[in-house]
Image (cartoon, rainbow, N blue to C red):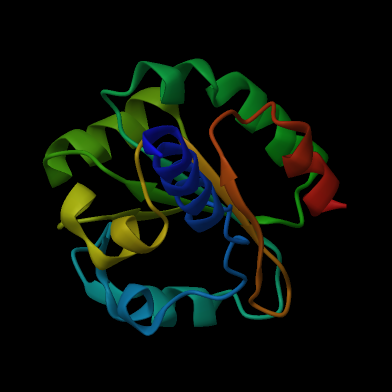
Length: 163
């Protein structure tokens, strides 16, 4: 009887843990989350995305202290050359705006830059289930999330979705 109960419980557990499909749109909470521009202006994710409406966007969640982020920069820069029509949107998880701006300059990162003042505790981070950086996402020209989770810029799914 005990064995049957254990098997039943495990079955229920695995059925409930079935993988959910990745979202194709941002939640309202994530869209209302605020980010800071280089100039110090506060904007919502929704207004940032609207700025690039009709364009393909590659989102790179990064930080200047993140070794994996920095190691991937040469491949990211090569991707920027190969896909120059794509908007490269960098969302920084740095602890301070000073370190964020210094990182952009130090590593000569071209693109649209925004600072995440709430960092790991933000509605955006919660929505994307941020557990690692770098984190890459692709937003298509219609504003839909085409690639929800990539942690390496060399992930073949990135190029696949940029075509």
